[in-house]
Length: 392
Ligand code: GLV
Ligand code: MN
Ligand code: MN
Ligand code: MN
Image (cartoon, rainbow, N blue to C red; front, side, top):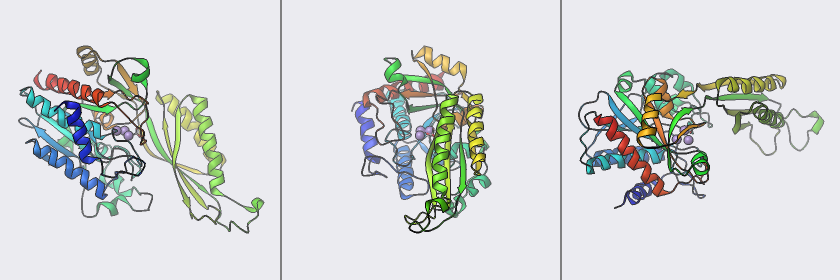
């Protein structure tokens, strides 16, 4: 079967998991969907005769070849944002599995072990921290930090995990010699700027997440005169406009994509709104600038702002990027999207990513798309990269 068809068959196996009526996916931590995807990963690993393992941080691994030291690692994540697309995450995991098949078909015997990884909760779709699995693995966050996290139903991470325990895993990190993640491009650089179906990544913009809380006073929607109201959501609306203006003034990106409104009744004036802010910029000074302006707007409105996470710029390994770009004739791209590859690179592992062309550039949406033939080309090149790194 052609590689594109084999990829389509693997996508079909997980297609119904967490699918929404509009064709998106909801795949969140500790859900039935999460369990089904983790079972799928394990089955795929074992079906290939690879050794299945979980690290202390909850990430899943499939090992191919002898030993564990200085491994060449590839993979991505199987969770999604709310109503995410099919490719962001799963493409990298499925491609990694198919690349192992390709290596076997090509009769390549790696001198270094190769591992496929499924990182846990990359999107932070349930608990507000992105890249949970890689951040915990590398120890940038600790188990106690996670236990404090709360989902939008007020359930803490500690409650959700129940008896399961998670911890940093320095030994698992130590084993990663190189990391290369294949991912759908989350923009239109390849579709508009070049004819290439594939690029290699050199950087990830600095980005962060903040929680902003605005208080008002709950009251009756039918009896409270407009002039007498202290409406937290109305204040939040003005703040969202100020955030947009701050982003425009600084040439950055700032997004409020999630609000919690209390008490959350149609007929009650909102007493408290929690806004979740995502901000990204090509340079850290630009990110500081937009956050400075937003903090002032927050202060002016008597609101409170608290940082959830801040991820500095990632510069992927210069030699590795240049080598892959030259050897496989790939254009080089940066991105504003965060990835586990960035966390792994920041921990000192030579890492990079391969981006597959996305015709519309859309991502974090059911409309995300990629041509399966482009994806298959990505798998071929990923196989070449793994073969090169594991036999060099
Ligand atoms: C994750 O995909 C992010 O960039 O937010
Ligand atoms: Mn994503
Ligand atoms: Mn992703
Ligand atoms: Mn991401």
